[in-house]
Structure formats: C-alpha cells, structure tokens
Image (cartoon, rainbow, N blue to C red; front, side):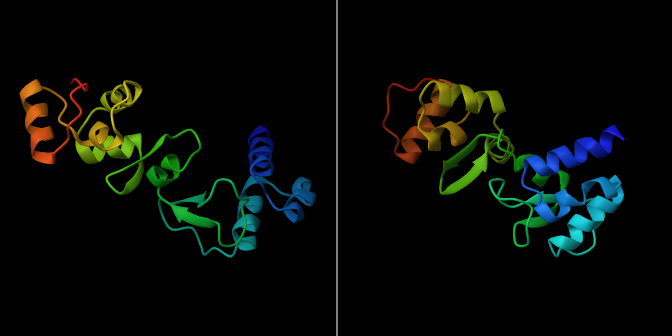
Length: 146
C-alpha cells in the first residue's frame, strides 16, 4: 500500500496528467504503470529498461517519455552536474568515465577555477605531463597547477 502511495506521489509531483490523477484510487501499482504507459503512447517495456522523461522539466506526456537503461535514467536527473566542454555536454560521471579521471579530480579542478576543457581532459598527475599536455594543446594559463 505504501509503495502505491509513494508511486503516485512521485508521479503527481513530476507532472502526471490530471486524467490519471482523478482515477488514482482505482489503481494498484501495476495497473497504474500500465495505464501511464498507454497514455503516453509508448510501446511495451523492453527487458532491462525503465520509463524515463527526456526533459525533466516537462510532465509525463507523449513525446517526452522514453525507455532508458538504468544508467541512462540515473544520469538524467536534476542532481547531476552537467559540464559542456570539448563540444559535448555530459555529466561529471560520464566525463570521468570518458577521460579516465577520478570524479573528485574533475570536481576539484572545477572548484579551483580550471577552464572546463582542461578540467575534463588534462592528465591527472605529474607536472611534466601537464606541461607537455598544455604545450601540445596550446593552453597558456600558467596559474593552473596539478
């Protein structure tokens, strides 16, 4: 019972259409999920996928709902910090995975005022490696330290 109440509280908070809100007491968790899936015109649930909103500022509605992997779903939240660098917008976790850097290394660099491109791409250790990186990439900010 508490799971069903929590499910509807969450959906109403994030913009569940009012026609489902009006019928809320008649649903149990599984039927409500199926009704929502049908309302937003999304096909059957693929194995290992979860329901996700493409734009978290818009409600669950046709065109804004998709099937996503759990990793995609967890990276599409308001609490993630998105960084636009090197022509791409990715969350810090994705930048860390892509660059091989530790998440805390990237966050520390940002807190210290590093340029975004360098914060997500400069080598993590060694002054000589950083010097070579800057020379090869023509970065000229001498105030940045590794």
